[in-house]
Image 1 (cartoon, rainbow, N blue to C red):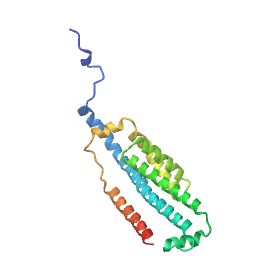
Image 2 (image 1 turned 180 degrees about the vertical axis):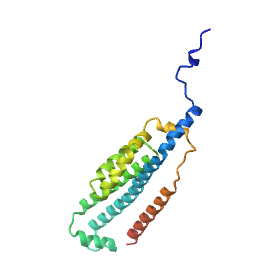
Image 3 (image 1 turned 90 degrees about the vertical axis):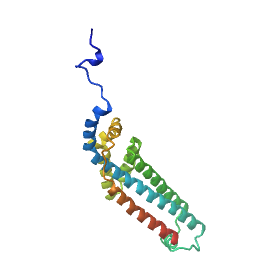
Image 4 (image 1 turned 135 degrees about the vertical axis):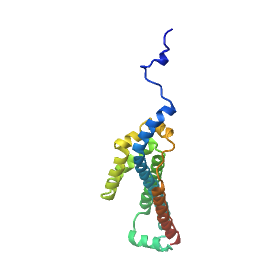
Length: 201
């Protein structure tokens, strides 16, 4: 009787979850440190997006108030803006703050996408990082670092099509998340303080 082709000892063995787990765990452990770097960049985008969205929203409101009440606006921040801006076109100012708000929303989406390791989050973060590099020197350095994290050798491997399967096969491989939590808390406190000062003025 002929041997079953499926049992051919020289054929490439079919992989299953149990057989692939050791190799998948090795690959995951080689890259999960870089996963943490990607997620750190994601947190920066997400929290920066929250801050810019807040700033843009507050700026649009302040610009509208300035346009309507040039002569007698209450609030130290608004009066200070009037003193600095003088006779500026407040419709233009409002449009600029709308641009800030829109960039904040895009940053938030990019951060959320990176935290979920989504390719579209990587693409959006790449675009924002490239644009941010014009803000020399901080934006240049931050943008260059983000691009390296996202498009370096390990970054390309992590966003490869099969890496999600590797992540699914290695649920026990975890990275300590306390640094991201600390950064989240600090930025949240700063944003909350800014909002409080603006609303109090």
